Every structure is written in C-alpha cells, then in structure tokens.
Image 1 (cartoon, helix red, strand yellow):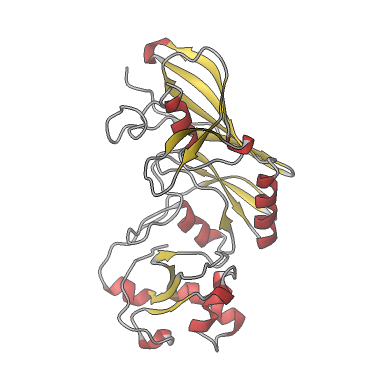
Image 2 (cartoon, one colour; image 1 turned 60 degrees about the vertical axis):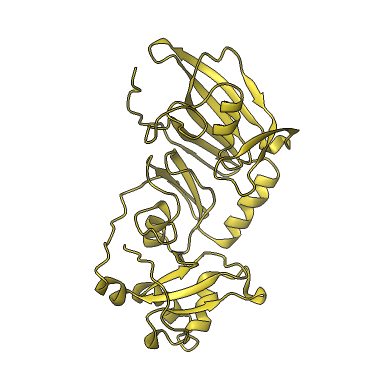
Length: 298
C-alpha cells in the first residue's frame, strides 16, 4: 500500500472537484471514528461508500494516512487525495515489509516490529510503517502503543473501539505489564527501581527530574548477565505505563546507557539500539517476542 503526502489546491468538499478535498474537525466531531467523521466530505456516499473511500483515496489526518478506526481530535484536518492523482505525480511508492503477528483474538493483535521500521506514518515522509501494514490488513484496528523507530518488538493494536477503551482502563489500573530486554554499558550488579519523573515537554530528548514519579511510571531493571567481551549487562526492564523514552532515559540517568543509544549515550549516529519489547501481559491477552540482534562490535 502506498501513501503520498500532498498539499491542497482547493477547499471544495466534493472530492471529484479538487486535488485534495479537506475539512477541519470541530469540537462536536472530536472522538468519532475517522470513517464516520469523513462523511462530511462525501455526505451522499452512505456507510459502504465511506468505507470504500480508502480504496479510491489516501485518507489523511494532518497530512498523515490514518485507518478507518482512528479517533479524530478537534482541530485536525481530514483530507482526501485521489490515489490516481498521487500516482501521477511520479512520487515513489512503498511496500510495507511483512510484519509477524505474534498473537491475535477478536479484541487485540500483537505485531512484531523490526528495528528501523517506524510505528506510525510521518507527515510529509511517505514510507512503510506498522500503521500502514495494519491499515492494509485490519483497517478498523487502532495502535495502542508506540515504539521508537530503532526499537524492536511488540506493538499492540485494538480491533474494536471497546477493546481500545478497555486497554486504557487496564493501563490506568496498572494491569498491563510491558517487559523489555536490553544491553546496557557497564556492569549492573543489582536490581534497580528507577522512580524519577520525566519531563517530555517540547523535547526531542527527555529530561529526568529529581521528583518522584507515579508508581505506574517506574522502570524496574533486573540484571540477567554480564557479558565481558562487550563490557555490557543484559537487563530485563519492566514498565506499566511508559512515558516517551522512559527506559532509555532512566537507564542512562542511572549510569547504564543502552548500547547503541546515540541520544542518551555516546554512540555514533546510526548505531544499532539494543532495546527490544519482549513481552506484554494483561488480563485475557499476552504476547512474547524474542530479540533478533546483530552481535555488538567489540
């Protein structure tokens, strides 16, 4: 499946009369599924017709392709770009790499994201992602967690809006366990509970503060083995409700930067990041993924 970002040349709500038909989501539409909110762009299409829009158009939210089940927010711009027009621009098409499904039931699907593949499509940067794969295979599904592009492992999706709501409720209760495995620099001798708050405001690189975080935001790190040739420790890290870069920032702040982390460590740009989301456990659903890492350079 290919998605191409393009700028609007018109504002008519008839997709046939514009290069890019668009509308802005109002407060009254906030929270609706995208395949419902998009009805204002094609009011006469009916339910089946709106669902077929994804076959004929790239459906963009703020310039980024989104699946039918995406929940819109006030102020976002929904746009329809005819696929034939996108193809005629000569811009590159992208195939999404095959992504392994680790576990799936009627409510959730656990996907195995390889390192280097974005979780979500980026505005203005068309290309493969977990989101593109999910949209092509389960268009009603919604991503529930996001991994940094260099991080590998489990990405969870909800198959229904009720499952999405249930997941967030379980997270608030601390009943979703996420276990990562990582290689850190140095020798970690004992288990650590990393409990400092993280400042994410307007930062590409987050900052660890001196204040105590909620227990749901702690990182629990357990050393599994010291690997002398690499001068590194294999570590199991568990979180409940993760903040952006939480494990990476917490471990670096504790003096154990992750091997290959150019942002929080001292590795060169483009180094392989040894961080993998290995296990997810919650009531009624679980998934396991073992890392496939290249050998570190000695």
